[in-house]
Length: 365
Image 1 (cartoon, rainbow, N blue to C red):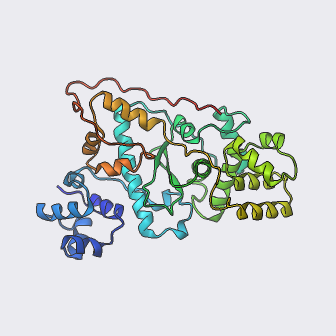
Image 2: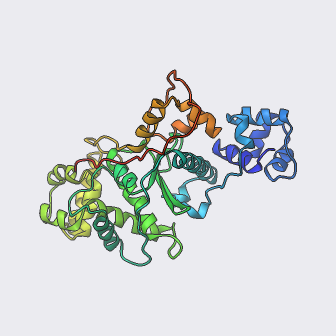
Image 3: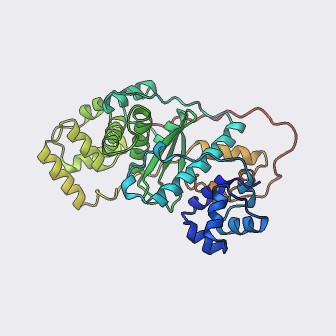
């Protein structure tokens, strides 16, 4: 039996209109609409054409019902600048990531979520409270991807085709998810991590998840989380010059612009000094890039997962087959981790061993 929601999800994952899928398969649009809305079911021959056009194995379309990631559940950074088709494509990728996470939790003991939610505190107060809960002290945050994974967030990368989507996050069944664009600089990636954490902590049932004010609040949370007030005030002089900012940004591993914004927020730069510094940094190329940037932070959990799986004879291709997805879909979630399959023995039959416990080793600050 074909599952209609999976036809829609696969089509939206490929960012295809019904008309385009009709042209690729030779199946009339109305019939495709009937398939997606459960008014009729495709024949085996029609399903084969749909699967071939969408690049998914036929087994994907007969698996259990898949729960889509609702638009209102996702905090898109630039929702108004992201087309609906692109939003649906990345939400479909997120739905596949949720299925992959469910597959993982059946086989591994992952860190339990330790992410508080607050209804009304200010972004600065929220950031300080989370830092205290996670025992970060008043110094720079360590590797942010490792940190979020250690606190039970599921962190995945976005497909490289979605370059205009910075990042987004959502809650699903009390599990927090964050998706990151790996084409951004290392500094921008750290800020994106903290920004999405801010949405998860501050926004939900009581407060809007998206909109200009929610974005400003998430930005203020990220700034305070990555650059604690006490540490910045202790280290940075009032009226810091551009060369001092460029030297100091490595302390917190943030962009020069982000540190400049933080200094202004903390009243260590006047309005005039702030505008002048931003103008000078833009002239030096720091508005759109980080010429002397840090390496991009990536997952610690995912390489451990696939190392353990390989040790048991399970290849990445085998995982993809169990999930009924192309290997490329798995690869798109992996921060560039190579999933090239190596010859193996396959999954050994017999009883399943106890789930391995995966822990994240804190990175040096």
